[in-house]
Image 1: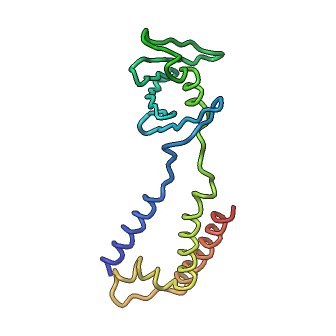
Image 2: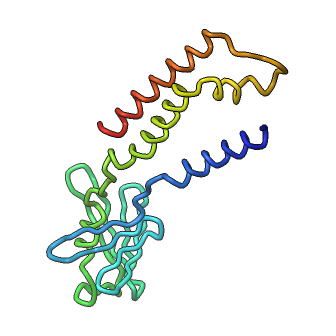
Image 3: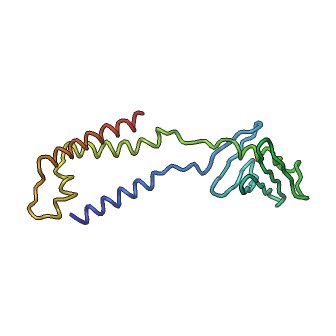
Amino acid sequence: MKKLLICLILLFGLILSSCSVKNDKYEVAIQDKTFLIDTVNKTILHEGQIYKYDINGPTITITYPDNSKYWWTQQANGGYGGMSDNYDESKYVPGNILIEALTNEIPTTNKSEKNYFLGFILLALGIWSTVSPYSLWYLRYGWIYENAEPSDVAIELIRIGGLFLILVGVIFIFV
């Protein structure tokens, strides 16, 4: 029984860790151009060209495929920028457009999408607690003691907790 409990805990942890939602790549449209921003590799993809970027405090530096650079430092009411000697605005997308693509708001995942999984888990645990409180008591305490039985109060508290979990699960799913 101990091994089963440990396996269930590990499986539950694995399921929860695999369900984290990350938005590593997203698209931005600026002046009829579409850019794919990759926040992990710190790249911007546009029409087959890969531009690398680095953000250091208020300064964003864009490195072009030919290793030329464009940088911009944001200040309160504006900012200032510059470029390397070999920077050619006509060869690639201008630096100011790439900076604008980077500084656009990053799209976020819909909150309700994140809550479905947690809501269903809470709902399932709540139903389990309400329908079979003895099994939950046994998983927590019963296997430790020989010939032990839960009190009526313990069983009722587990049922009440289950009803609470059902309520929270429903809120997570539908709100």
